[in-house]
Image (cartoon, rainbow, N blue to C red; front, side):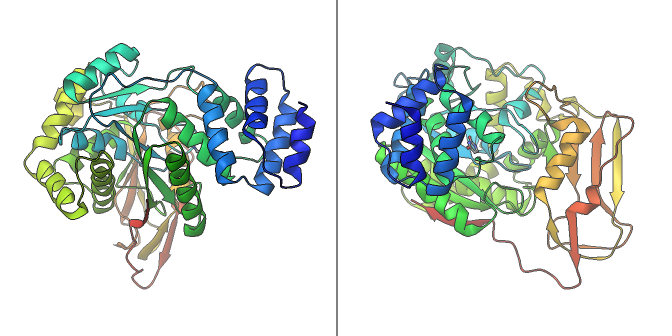
Amino acid sequence: MRVVDVINKKKVGKALTQEEIEFFVQGYVKGEIPDYQIAALYMSIYFQGMNDEEIANLTMAYVNSGETIDLSGIEGVKVDKHSTGGVGDKISLIVIPLVASLGIPVAKMSGRGLGHTGGTIDKLEAIPGFKTTLSTEQFIANVNKHGMAVVGQTANLTPADKLTYALRDVTGTVDSIPLIASSIMSKKIASGADAIVLDVKVGSGAFMKSLEEAKRLAKCMVQIGKALNRRTIAIITDMNQPLGHEVGNANEIREVIDVLSGKGAEDETTVALTIATYMAIASGKYHDFQSTHAELLQVIESGRALEKLKDFISIQGGNPQIIDEPSKLPQAKNHIEIRSNQSGYISRIDAEHIGLVAMLLGAGRKKKEDSIDYAAGVTLLKKVGDYIHINEPLCILHTNLDTIETKVLEAYVFQDSKPDPIEYIHEVVK
Ligand code: URA
């Protein structure tokens, strides 16, 4: 088989066979096929798309390119959750203890942040002592014994996705629905999930800018799940402003504590409870949305959720005292108050822009190798729909840098009339 024939076939919109897909994925991982041919092929996929069968085959070719995690040693249906990436997105940290409180095993493999989006592993490492590198045996033992564990992604999971993602990033082929869907689903399947709940973000701070595109991505991933026998539910949630009030690492942990204490921001709490409810339903242990949602709310109100978070932190070596004394989390030396340069209702806060500001303050990485400052971040004092007077504080920048140059005010759009309320949950695709 010749790669050029596969490229030519896709270029004219024909469907690739399983054999052809396995051929180019394996050839690329082994270094037998050069970047430029895969780049040409992926550009053809970008323009011509793929059918459901090709997408499922591409997903499995990524899965088979590396090691897979066998979670069969954990009793019950293992539910994983994945977000397509947002700003201030700390939902995983909220739902892990919440869902585990219902007796549903949560075995979560998570990643680090890059660019304007944060990563669960970085946020957890803001907790003094917290360990995110567990052996697979330890990971499984923790889930069996305590009902929950989080681990950083192992190096050899879906290497084909790692390689092709890096290539897509520099060849303009990231925003292709079949390529995003197979990339995300391959990691979830390789990490052993039986059921998958996807938080598909839509809006200015997300990959998918329109509801139409988000729906197409959601349907595509649910279809892959069906084809590969994994119960999959996708929830399309809003990312037209950062989620909650905190963007960063240590400050996001503080907000997780607030949500699990019942004092969280409305958007964060609504999205977290919805995702947790669907995780419980995907596990097969719960069936009805309203009663499951009410039970989870009760878990928060009774204080059990916060206790579970404390357990989670202790089990993985972190200092649980941060729950009662959040001042034990890393603190920045500078807190810079940014005041509004006009009066009006806030109609938009560009999430990507705020994410980039947080990165420049030290909270994120420009390149994979960069180190991050756990104390850095942004606190949003006002959100979309709030009225602000000129000179009133809008947000606070936390940083250890002595000189900063950020144009944070450019993220805000104001208007004279009160904007329509934001819908936090747009659609559920099953
Ligand atoms: N997240 C992924 O893991 N892969 C993509 O292609 C896009 C977002």
